[in-house]
Structure formats: structure tokens, C-alpha cells
Length: 366
Image (cartoon, rainbow, N blue to C red; front, top):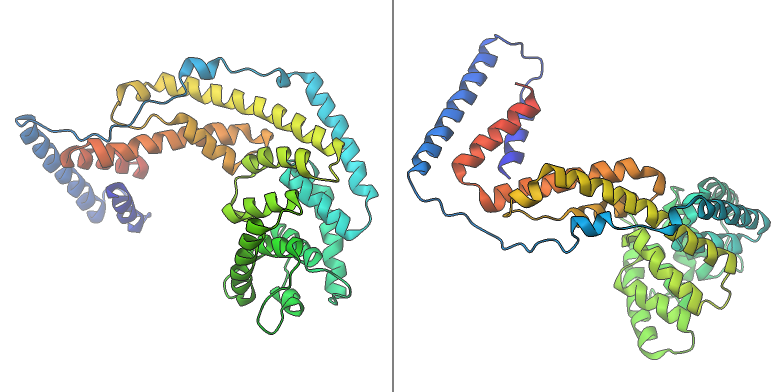
């Protein structure tokens, strides 16, 4: 907190102040005076017994040697070649499917299997065509709640401007949305893409949540749908980490989906393992860097949480081609965690004032 407030103060200062001006000289004098005061406090503390706090953080369960031992057969070129072959099969599949609902279901399945990043261009073209047709003809003749909700979620997820009013015709006098669980689940997922002021979705979330709870509790007719509903009630798709969702859905898709496509399943499993091999190399790189810094061993009061920092970056940027981003973000996260513990756990007031001033001067370039 101290670092944040001081940096905020520094940000308010004019950037065009030239060295030697009265303001600049005064500010430098203020900094020197503050450092001297902090140093005086430190000298007084030298004559006293300083009691250090501790949060009793446990050591990491992922050791350096274990991380460096990670390996995968899927890093080989033969698997990468097989991925490319399967991608072409799926790309042909996207072109072949013409029915809009089947197109959207295929896109949704690709997203949940963690494969959609391979087909960004094709997906954008398909959704663009669907959006153009919807814009020119807003009538919902013979369209189900499921189809409309799925379309809404995919379009809004990919940046198309869609209106909540598309759901008005599905509400009865009490504000309910019928009794079709497949459609209710699709509406539940769509509702979490709402923006401020969309009242229909606030009501929809309440209704669909209660409906799905009752469905999961009492219905045993469709195991696949029940599994998806129970999973959605834990967290909607909008809030989930994509890579973890893909790992979960691969198993569900294989075991419970009546119309499981073997090509999609094979590609999903192979792609997941190939990408996982990339993650292992990224992690080994950052683990080597972290060990060279020595912070994990020397600063035993701070959290040694490199693995958790890396998991966070995978959640933010999972695509294999962004390895540099994952590596550098992991390093930043690890350093921020250490600095946070310096402030919150270990440092005395005098030490933290000197440390803050050093960081402030580094950032300010003076």
C-alpha cells in the first residue's frame, strides 16, 4: 500500500520539470531529507531487538529438480504433423456444415474442447454471416430458446452487437422462460454476458439458476445435460479458465455426448498434450531463472510460489505461440509476490521507507 500511494504522488508531479529548477531542487532536497530520516530510524532500530513477523508460508511442493525433470513425448514433430492433419479435417467440417444451428453447435464444441483458437478466421466468418442474417431479419419464426440463446452467447462473446430484446418473446406473464432444460441452460450461460442495464438478464439469471438446481436434483433422463447443468451452476462458462474447462470437457464429451465426433475428440486430446509440452518448456525456463535469483531460498519469509504464478499466466494466455508472454508474466508475478511479502510481513517501517524511496527513484529515473 505504501508503494502504491507514493507512486500515485509521483505520478501527479509535472514531467516537464527541468533539472536545476527551484521545484526540482526542492523535491530532491525533500527526498534526501526523507532518506536521512529513514536512515536515522534504522540506526535506532540497530540498537533494539527487531521482532520479525512471519506468515509461516509452507515451502513449494513443486521442487526445482522435479520441474526440470518434466518431459513429454508430445513435443515431437510427428505429433505436430498429426495435429495439422486433423485441423484440416475439422476445417473441412466447418465449411461443409451449412445449417446455422449446427454451425453454432460445432463452434461451441470447439471452444469447450479448447480447439477454437486454431479456427479463429473460420469462426469469425461464420458468425459474421449469422449476424448479418439476424440484422436483416430479426423475426424468430420457429426458433427455439436454445438456438437463440446459443447464438446470442457466441455473437456477444466474439464482439458482435446483440440486443437483450431478442429474448422478450420467450417470457410469459410471470417473467419465466418455459420448461425446456436445454434452452434454459443455454440462456443461463448467455445471461452472464450481460452488460449494465440489461434487466432481462438479471431476471433470467435468477430464474435459470433455480430451474437448473431443481433439474439437477430430480431429473435423471439426460446424463450429459445434467452434468453440464451441474457444472454450470458451479461457475458459468464466462467465468471459467479456458484451459481447465477444456480438460474437463474432453472427458465429458467422450463419455456422455451421444453424438460425439471422434475426429474432434482425437484432435482435442492430441492438441491438449502437445500444448502441455509447450507449457512444460515455459515452466522449466522460468524455474531456472527463479533459482538463479536465489530469492526463493534466501527470503524464507516470502511465498515461494512460482508454480502458482505460472498457472495464472496460463489462465490469461493459454495459446502455445505466446510462450514469451507466459514466461515474462510469470517472472513479474513472482517478483510482485515477494515484494508484497516484504511489505506485509517482514519489513520494519524504517526499512520500508528506504525501500519505497529506492523503488520510487528507480521508477522516476532520479
